[in-house]
Image (cartoon, rainbow, N blue to C red):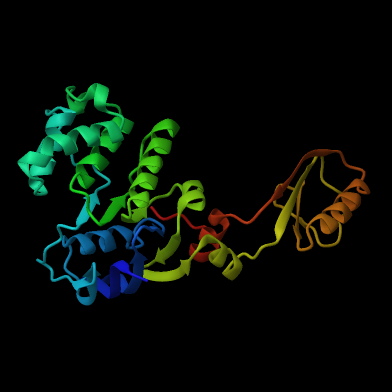
Length: 304
C-alpha cells in the first residue's frame, strides 16, 4: 500500500505540558482519515505540525515517501484551517486568484483552475461578490476551494463544517468525496460524528495527546462497546419491580436492556415489560454508534 502521509512518534510539549505523546498514523492515497478527540486533545497541534507551523520535539513526518524537515517543501500539501483564511474585501474570484498564485499555479492555468473551483464550490454565480458578504456556508466552501486550488496530494481540514447549515455541510462533504475520488488523501478533524460514520475510511481517536484507538468504525465498535443493541423503554410511571436483565435509569421511568441475541431477546424483553402493568410511553432499539465509542474511550466529563 502506498502512503500519502506517515507520522511516526510525534511528540510535542509546551513547558511541562505534553500536547502530543508518541503519535503515529498512516494515511493511504485516496482515503479519508478523521481525527476525533475532546477539546484540547492535541488534534490541532498534530495538524499544525504536519503543516510545518509547529516544530515537533520528536518524531518524523513523511509526505509522499519523503521525510519532511521543519522548513521542507510542503507544496503537495493543502491546509484548510478552522478560522476563515480568506480576504473579506476581495471577491470570491480574487481570493482564488491570490491563493492560486501563492500556491504556485501558473498564470496560464490560473483562470481555468479558478473557474473550476468556483463551479466545484457552487459559487460561480457569486464569483464577483465580496467574500465578506457571504454566508457562513459559502465562506467555508470558498475556504476549502482556496486551500486545494493547486491540487495537493494530501489535504488537512480543521473543523471545516463549523457554523454551517445542514445543506452547506452536506455540500462540503460531497466536495471531500469528490477530492477522494481524484485520489486525494484527507485528514479531517470534526465533531460531526454522523458524517464520520457515513464517509470515513479510518478513525483515529486522540485524548490527552495520545492515540487511544484507531481503525475502521466496525473495528472500533468491536473493540469498545460491542455489537449488542440496546432496548430503551420509557414507562408512564415508576415500575414496582425491575425485570431481570433490565436496568432502571435515574429518572425512575426508563428501563434499558442489552440485546445480545437480537430479535429473540427483543421479544422476550417486550413480554417482560408488558407484565409490569405500566403503559409504555416510548420504545426504541439503539444500535452501537460512533458516539458511544467516543464516550467509552474519552469519558463523559466536559472538556471546556
